[in-house]
Image 1 (tube, one colour):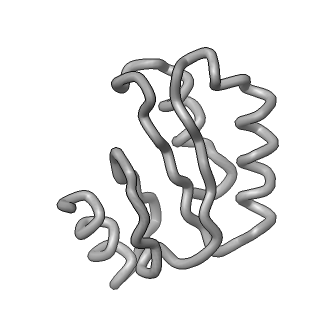
Image 2: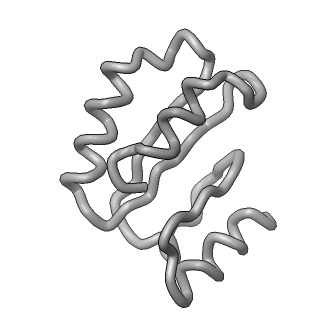
Length: 87
C-alpha cells in the first residue's frame, strides 16, 4: 500500500460503486500512518468510500475487501493478492 499513491487517487475519483471499501495492507507502520494522514486530509467521506489500513503481510490478511490492487508484490505476495481477488 505504501503511502497511498495509488489507493487515494482511485478512492477520490469516485468511479467505483458507492461504499467501496479500500483496505491498504503494508508491513511498514510509518507508511500506513502517512496514508491515514493523507486520507484524512483528502476528506474522502464525500465520495462515499472508506480507506482502511492493515499492518502486516498481504499473505496474512484474510479480511473482507471489495477489490485488490497490488504493486511490487513479489513471490507468494503476488499469489496471495490473486487469491484475495478471486474470493
